[in-house]
Amino acid sequence: TARNGIEVGASPGVAASISVDGNAIFSGITTATTIKSTTGIVTTLTSTTLNVDGGDATFTGASANIIFDKSDDALEFNDDAKATFGTGADTTLTHSGADFAITNTTGNLNILNNSADAVQIRHGSETMIKAISDGAVELYHDDSKKLETASGGVTVTGTVAATSYTGDGSS
Image (cartoon, rainbow, N blue to C red; front, side):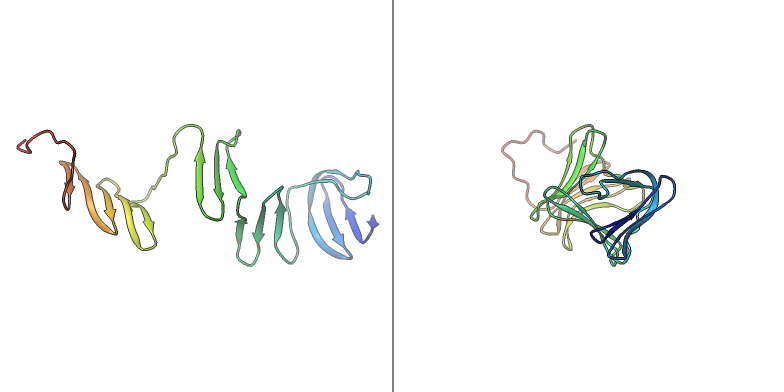
């Protein structure tokens, strides 16, 4: 039915479309529809597929948006938009515009690397921490390795300063 330039056609289990002034902006297969409101405009449309013809899809939040950028094949989260995981939103990924945060409120936060390569924390091209599969963990200062674990202990490059020390190194 057309109203104010908006046309909605939908029935559960069949193709559905929403057009504005004759241009399709949504098409998909519906699983349920609710076409009720005081204005007669669709208020709920559940679909198994979502096709946004000709451009990006914007998901508008209360204070931040998420956009699927068709030209970049990317799901882009604006500053302060969150990706949440877990039934109780136990883990969130957020970016404030200044900082990026991974927040986990239950269990361990595990970073898994199932390849033989190392896990690294870097700033630009400078290594800060490197954890090598089946090997050493290395700590760096200004991209220079200063501490490295080994099967027999720890190797330190440079001077060690301590407020106290026990042992003489003979065993």
